[in-house]
Structures are given as structure tokens and as C-alpha cells.
Length: 185
Length: 147
Image 1 (cartoon, rainbow over the protein chains, first blue to last red):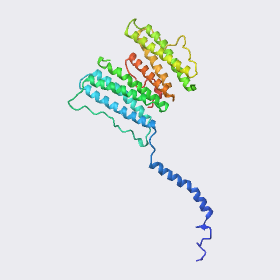
Image 2: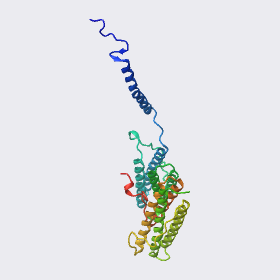
Image 3: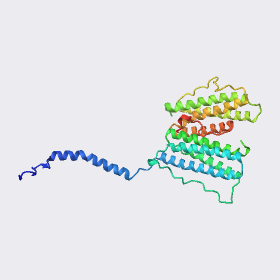
Image 4: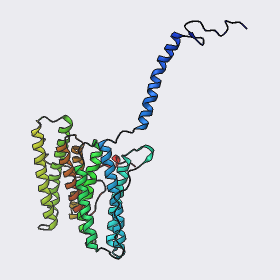
């Protein structure tokens, strides 16, 4: 076996020149930095933009409204008022359409959706509210919802602002519709 | 204050819709029974459209523009010969007004955006009174909704 075999000449590392090694290291540096940036991005997700938070809040509120109508239908159905039940179900359907459109504007990683934290609680057993109080509560909720949508227009992208304005208008029309509910319109 | 081309176009579109509605209510009112609640409602709504048209004209002028004058006559969406057709015309006009105001809602200027949204709501409420039913998305064309 030759004593020179495997021995490195000055300036060489395992058959690579120092220049080649440094060039390779320099080329690899951006990759290392990129990798570090990637890990950082995964580690700390940025907070949602203000319009995303507004949209998420609207979704939660709309979902609560759908649940509120479901509860109202249950309460009124027991009173056998079919005309009012039909009307409430019709309005509930529009709220469900609002909810679907709002959700379609929100793309969340992994398909997550805003949690439903505002669902109304069911009335305690034995304390069935009157039809008048059910309808009155719904009218108050619709008015507040309509005003809330318009109050949130600032800073929204144009198409989302238009959707909010249209939903605000729709929910405002539920008030006179509910007002006439007992006339069997 | 000078309005951007997009702002001026949206204001002029809303003004044109209000002028058409004012004209249309004149036709509708003539086919509703004299002294009836319906005719009184038509008069109230006609006045609301005149007031809104004045407001829009002021907004256009304040931004250095010239409000387009109303036409002498407008093509109605369908013939009006009966009270029922007059009622249909009323809510059809309101739907068109709501659609036009959504153009203001798309603008970045918050004052105009809020004004537009308030007017979409007012038009939807008038349409509900004439139609007797509600709509899920007043003013929004179905093509703009996501399936």
C-alpha cells in the first residue's frame, strides 16, 4: 500500500478543492436560510386580517341566528300555528343562505371554521314563551343584526362589503315580515 | 373634493336608477285606486326616490361632476294596465334601485359606502312591502353568489 494514497494535499478536502467547498457552502446558504424561514412560518401563524375576523364574527352570528329560528319553530310548532311556522322556516332558510355565502368567502387552512359560540340556549322546560314574545325577540335580533352588518363595512373588500350590505337589507326586511306574521301573510 | 372616475360612475348609476324609479312610481300610482293605502304608499315611495335623487345630485356636484338629467320617459320592464301590474312594477323598480346602490357600497369611501348600504336597505324594505315576501340577497345578481 502506497503511503501517498489517501493523503490529502494542502488545500484539498477529500478530493475537493477549498474553492469548490466554499462555493458549495455559499450556494447552500440560501437553502439553509429558506428552511429556517419555513420552520419559522409554520411555528408562528400570523393573526388573521381584520376583514377575516369580521367575516368570522359574521359567520358565528349568522349560525346563531339559524339556531335561534330553529328554536322558535320548535316553540311555535307546539302551539300549532302552521302559518307562522311556515314563515319562520322561510326566514330561517334565508339565514341559512346568508351563512352559506359567508362561509364560501372564508378559506381556512385545513377546512377549519369559526366555532359556534353564540348559539342560543333553549327555553327552560315548562316556561314556553308566548308567540308574541318569540316574534318580538326575533324582530329585535334582526334589527340588531342588520345594523351590525352595516357598521362593519369599513375596510372590507368591495365584494364582501356588497354581500354584507345585501344581507343587512335582507335581515331588515324580516322585521316587517315578522310583524305581519299573525295576519297570515 | 374631486371624485374618482369609479366614484362618479357609481353615483351617476345610482342617480339614473332613482330617476327611473321616480318616473315608474308616477305610472304605478296612476293605476292604483284613488285614495287607497296602496296609492298613498306609492306617493310616499315616489317622494323618497325624489329626495334620494336630490342627495345623489348634490354628491355628484360636490365632487366636481354634473348630475345627468332625468330622461323624459323610461322604458318600463313590462306594460302596466292593472293595479297588480302596478304593484309588480313598484317592486321591480326597487330591486333595480338596490342593485344600483351596491355600486356605491363597493367604493372605498366610507361615507358613500354607508349611504349606499342604507339605500339598499331602504329599497329592500319598500320592495318587501310591495312584494309581500323577502329576498335573501336584495340587489345582488345570482351570478355574483357562490355555489
